[in-house]
Image (tube, rainbow, N blue to C red):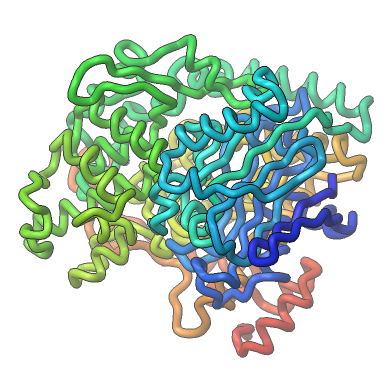
Length: 624
């Protein structure tokens, strides 16, 4: 590991770079390396859609290494237009390993191109190519055309192996939650990374190669592969639940526990959950053979879905939908029509949109309308009521093209709700919409939402695992005691998983010692499980420091929308619950070594981040 491609779009120059082993040892790759580079190279106050922002497309030391559990991933790191935070967005599929096979561990993209371009990387060589003919196309068409035109150079058989990450019309139009899509149906979805590429006039990155990643310690590697395979087979989530029903297995489980957000989080129980469940999807529209083909590179879990709807008005086929998407276009909008949910998902993939933010923002719009805060004349006669199937489809394409009311939805729920005087109706943290778990039903998960550096997110610390699923052990989800330590542990270990770059579903079966062994075997470093936690802590503090530099003074860093703190859950298995954030934050800050959400000099220096502490002090932002 250690070869990177730097692309300066203004000059059109590309060059190879390496990074010292001392840097890689501290930051690993992926998310961790991304925040390190961002602190070194991006002004935290830069406009995310301006020329001073940069975007890093990164793999990790485990990416594309055959035998490593769920290693078919990559991630993008940038300052996000949706949140103004440091932000990483992870994606699966086959693009990440193919980038590694093409000879690079990552691509650093800076400045702005005068005309649309795409980056072509093939067996250790890279070039910029004109993409004017691709501008305006959807993701699927872009992918097909790039493969077709490169077939003349590499041959038709090889061209089919080319993997493409691309933006759609949403990214070109700078929708603040536009995604980078790869392999047509996989998304680096959250935060608006697609808009960052759109602002730089980068339409796509195409990769192809045959360079196999090397393993430093084969003896240890064989041992750890054997151990991790055994653990995956013994874990019911990784061996049964996810392979059989995919992430949509959660619809009924979360609803039964009373935390399936419904009608913009007004309640946690959806009466139509069974109609949109993973079980119903499997019985009706799932193409099982194509679902297996859709699996990520080297994956043993194979949770990917591929579905088909054969009748009008929602006919189509494609990857997904996942649990979060089913919820976002379903319960969040009061919609129990599975065909319309699937269709909206197809459109989001083709047009390049984050489905979580898209569905969530539609829910915010509907509550604004319900409360008489949104002028109905702006709807142009569109029926906008809870449970309207065609609405999620209509508003998805309108948002991607910024057509009519879609232009306002394209700014995200927080900016939409704020425009009409009701920011409290945006269910978001740091302007990023919350995913499919009402925090009133799980106190630890609520704390993870509030303290997430990248904004509303369930994957900074997936507390649903211990609080609902009982992995690695079941804890009382309504209890606050002990949750700060558990959240911090998950956040730190997840930071390393995101830097390796691995799928977090592996964490149902594996934990710190397993990841330490994988890292040691692949890199040759002697990583202990204690160092895994230290590296994760370093990443989390670095991200928080970037955000402090971005936001400055007068900011409440860790809170939730007032609904969760003040309005008891009205029904279901979590009835009567509110989030007790004030019972958890002080202990969390103590464990982190923070004061009012900001890292202290002592903590930063302990983690080898004196240079970050000095920078905070220069800006007058160091607490204590």
